[in-house]
Structures are given as structure tokens and as C-alpha cells.
Amino acid sequence: MRSPTMRNFYYVISIIITVVIVVCLSGCANRESTQEEKNKAIARRYIEDLWNKKNLDEIDKLVSDDFVNHSSPPGMTPDREGLKQFISFSGAAFPDGHYTIEDMVAEEDKVMIMVHSEVLIAVSLWVYPVPVKS
Image (cartoon, rainbow, N blue to C red; front, side):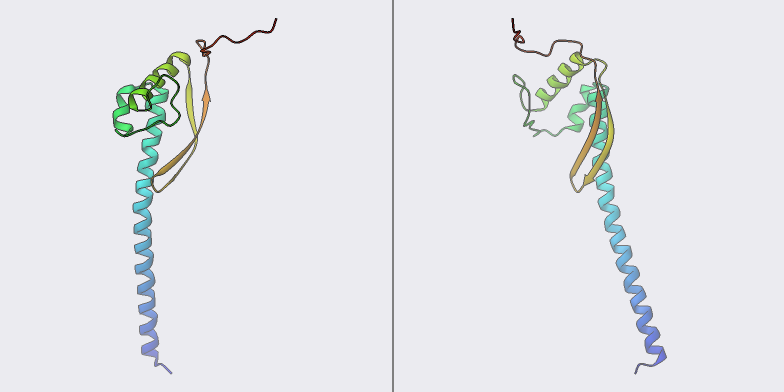
């Protein structure tokens, strides 16, 4: 059987170890959440500055040099220049368009954004004439 002094010693050591683990984990979590918050801020600026304000000067700050748009529209390059063209086209087609961020989730280096868009179509978006049945 352990003496009362020895039990107190183990108790103090276990508390110290628990505190060290909690501090270490919360420090790690703070670093991760800080990076995730930075990523969310970049994603928020992407929506606000590029799509809502149509400030294309910000694209070089927000989109990396090796950006590839895997769903670029026909006739537009899948790089930053093509994205600029697409945002300009969208701004002309939807001059009153506004994107509201409904939800945003960040995990590690990924950010998911759910946006609500409200647009008023100002130009014809049809590339080919719409067939009309006679």
C-alpha cells in the first residue's frame, strides 16, 4: 500500500500531465483553427471581392498562379485569365447579381461555401438559337 505522501505525489503528477496534454491539444487546435479561419477569410474575399464587387485586380492575390478551372466555359482558358473573363462575362450578364454566403466550412486546406445567388438576366445567354416548334 502506498503512503499518503506517495498517493498525493501521483495525484499531482497525473494533474500536471493532464494539464500539459490539454494545453498542448488546445494549442494545436488553435493553430489549426487559425489556419482554417485564414482559409475561410480568403474564400470570403473571393466571393465578396471578385463576384460581388467585380474587383478583378484582386484575382492575382486570391487565386494561385497554377489555378486550373476544370469547368471553364467553352472559349475561355482554364486559368486565371479565363476566370477573369468569366467573371467579366457574368458581371455583364448579371449586373445586379449578388452572392450571399449562407454557410462556410473549413477543414485543413479545404473550404466549402454554400452561396445563395440572386440575379437578373440582362443579356441573352443562348449561344445557339432556341428551336421553336411551329
